[in-house]
Figure: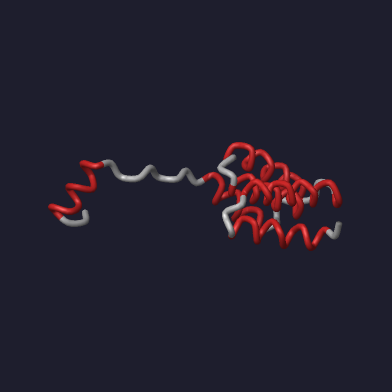
Length: 102
């Protein structure tokens, strides 16, 4: 299959919340074009969409070793390394509701 088509399908699958299909297409991109900064970033994106943050971090680190100047991969690495904040607990939500935002 055509690599650009698989890259587009990764994005579409991520947008639709189908992380399993996104990962299959991302793996196909890597199989077709090898491990380049671009293909690895596609794979890292699919892994991140599937909740596989640690695996995504390993893959984007590989991409950055190949080309540390790639600004989009640097940005993706920063996004991957950001730890999502847990939702506020019941007490925090109650305080916010009663006392207002702080």
